[in-house]
Length: 303
Image 1 (tube, rainbow, N blue to C red):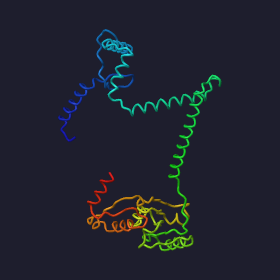
Image 2: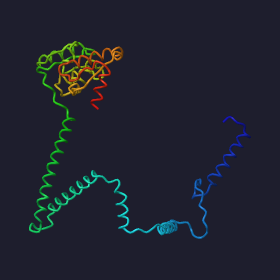
Image 3: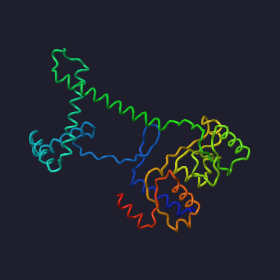
Image 4: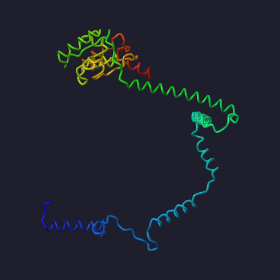
């Protein structure tokens, strides 16, 4: 701070005064000095302020507050709760409650027989029947759960590499070295694949690109709408043992209505031409709308 010595002394004196008023004076603690940041609590002189006295006072305050509350018996509390819940109760809640009670009864029956607390002649016949039915039901539920789990794991598992025999393959030449492209073409022909040129990209089911970060618009649209795999040359030459692969489900197999405005075509000519080619593909279930009003009518009908 660029101030005179006299002004500096006044500033320091003011800061010391504010510190003393806020935090109190410095107190001694053992061999070192430290600041007392908490103002000491003033005692009323009746007793020493300790944890025991605080607990005693706290219990007294709670007992006094409980005495002021109106006393209710257990049956009165249950009755009040029942009356209050009647307006919000509906049949769906009753069905859920019955299902919960049924599930709990099945759990008790199965646990009762598994633990074998009684001799066979001491178990009621209906208990054995109910427990057996519950056990069969639980086994079926476990099998269904296992199938769902295996299905999820199969989705996450790396899919097997497709046999190229008879499959149509497109090689994106952009960014790919000439010798590497020649190697990929020779491998595809040796495996029985059919090469597709740049003018027939929607007909391909496998797309070979140099890098996943540099994929042409036509390849992205064709794979996303008609399905297929986008792979790198390493994955192609190693038959899926190495490299990157991305599989796409055919979104155009689901029936949809589509409309493209002239304004969109004017601003996104490349994307529009690729979408038109994929919509007109034989496997596509997307259908054109002649106008925006027609598209809105189909949308209202679908909703």
